Length: 344
Ligand code: TXA
Ligand code: MG
Picture 1 (spheres, protein in one colour):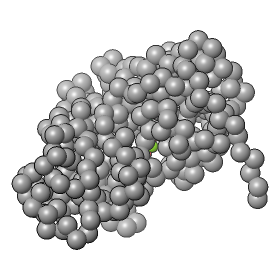
Picture 2: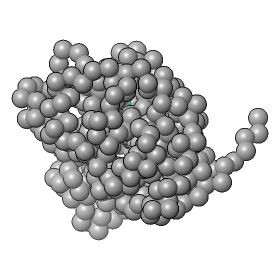
Picture 3: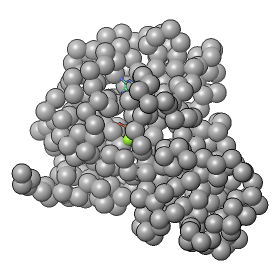
Picture 4: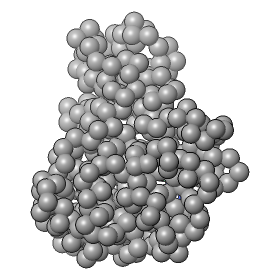
């Protein structure tokens, strides 16, 4: 089958750009735009045909549900069937911001968003461009990250263009994203609140706001056995993966350097912390300061893309901490590494 390629326009996210984005959304078309976490591909969440185009543009498996974006709780009517008390606490503490709350689904959300689930992920972005597009269009929009399925999420417009050229009509360029990893996903349906994806809002932040323990979905920090039931489908895919074979090495810098030196015959490259490249003596990409989860989160996806641009084949990566904000970085990195972690 021959598919007509779409002409993809990149425009600044100014008043005219936002008006054009709103027009396209109302017409059932796709628009890539910045949020405070990563860039997303938006479509009117009430329009099933429009939402289907997202799956085609990304090459995304149909069983992976999308997040619906609104400006505030006043837009939730019809999108959720109920706003549980825990959701109210979380919204009061963190919205607008980098948090997605899984709630019981309402009748107006296109079935295509929810992959057959009776829940829907709701997010209230703080980014002025995402908010302006919702306001100008009047549309709650469904939006996944704006990468080809399986690739690192894009944190700037040129990276969106690399993946989406010819696949959608408009990319709004709003500069670099502030946070760099996708929103924290937490479910408030079911008996206990459950963290499905770690992000800038940490487990500790959620527990403080809710005043209770939050369960951590097993899939966050380890590979699930084949056939295990995953309550948040996105966690089961190989993800964020550069073309190289990435292995995480869990240990000190000295142990890391010794391991890389011992494997010089493989001609490896390294994904390391800021300031370490010059000490390693092989091609390196740095991804943030050691122990600084926010800095690592901001740079991790661009760094994974940089590995691809360098054409590296074997990559050894420094392992971040597994708690606090670094939990989000560790979660993305073990997927980029197809769960290959070596304890030094
Ligand atoms: O920061 C973000 O959340 C970005 C920006 C664009 O808003 N969006 C994003 O969407 O990361 P996406 O589609 O790349 O990731 C959505 C994640 C997936 O892991 C998906 O499985 C999970 O959220 N998810 C969505 N709806 C769900 C639901 N009803 N139940 C469980 N998990 C859900
Ligand atoms: Mg994604």
